[in-house]
Amino acid sequence: MIERPSARLILLDPQDRVFLFKVHQPSVYDPAEPFRDPFWILIGGLVDPGEAFAQTAMREAREETGVVVEHVHWVWSRERVMQWRDKRVLHREQFFLGRAGSSAVDTSGLDEKEKSWTLDHRWWSADEIAASSERFEPVDLGRYLRALLREGPPTEPVTIA
Image (cartoon, rainbow, N blue to C red; front, side):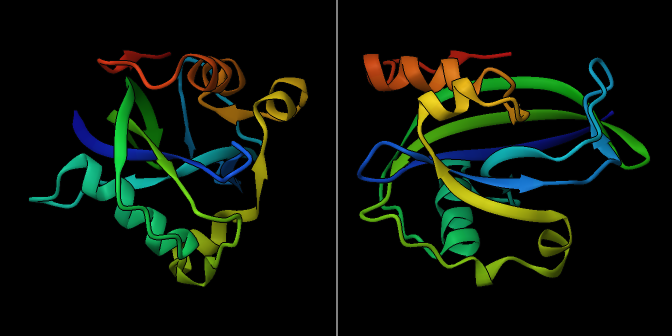
């Protein structure tokens, strides 16, 4: 099985809202729980060869939002099998917490592929996520984010579903 190392960034603005993209790519889904409608995801992407996961999270923030994040903290980990177009792929994800100095973003750095599946973007509070009927990835993002904001970053990364 192909492995896909990925880094995700929990980018918080000064009001502790997280930045998310609404995407729609029906050919990428969790075969254990197929969901092919649009959903909201964190900033992130594939770890390039020779790149550390944390570097990827910071690079993706710059490319996808124009936000320069200088320090990140590894807070969550997840492994799962995904259907990635016509292949089964083992996603190995590390989630990092980073801070933005403001809520200003510039998504013009998205590449053509990313633009093709990105429908929207916005900042969300943990309460808005928890109260929303929309789908998020991770599915329990509202609960995880509330705990992270309440307790602060863990000393060791937490494994999430």
